[in-house]
Image 1 (spheres, one colour):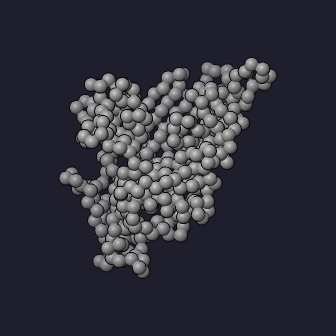
Image 2 (cartoon, rainbow, N blue to C red):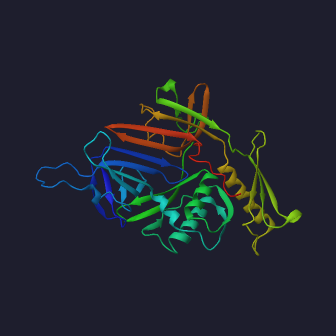
Image 3 (cartoon, one colour):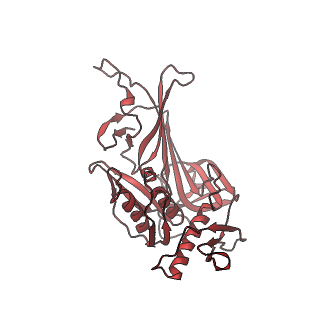
Length: 362
């Protein structure tokens, strides 16, 4: 595998064709991340008198691009050390995918929006990172016209925080696709396809022992912090405070959440219904953050019927079955590991367990 390295202005610096390992973690609702291990010096090639120093390529701000992926990574951290048991110095580079640049821009002034989620994400990016305070080389990709809608107002949050919240409260993912010929990052909203065995319109994808297409399966469920019914409190005091209830119980026992949304104020040109819809959207976002953590993960084995990137991909809804448990859920993460000539692909279906507890501010 060749890794093409570009500078911040998307000028090609070189190609890294030899490395110890690469972990490439793609995510649907937020930027993915990567970790690369490679030697400081490349092996001498025929005709060379000095080894090439990979630090001229692997440095914060530079871009790692793979021709077989739509995402590209931006290097954020670099460390150099000699691994235990080795005599060769090694570079460890870490970073996130291109859409992570959106955390460099704050949404200001207040963004008030009612309409399609896709348009909301595009407006948050355009108003705060393209038309004003532009991020270098960032552009808007083509709009797809996806159906999910929202109504909200936001200020003081980063453009990345806004896009992530909207993504988790809908069925849409987002990314920044590297357009090398155009020397641009194209912000795109996209939607996975339902390939679960619960539908019949498209070829179905089932990961199970029966199909011999999974190894090392793992199932997790955790209801700590789970809520499915929100009381969203907006402007006003005491009995005059505007409170909207958001019910996402779907037949399950009610688990309540209080959301202080006093920061959402009713504008002069806003009707009562429009304001209540904004409060409802805030409730949906907070319930998405407080969702039940339930997921299947497993090493996917490519078979004749199920090929990664051809028959299923990040964002698709697929089925996983093991131990009498079946989960029809979206592929929210795919971790790709390349080490010692071995490729391991691990999809995560459902809601991953949080890497740290976050009780939020509400």
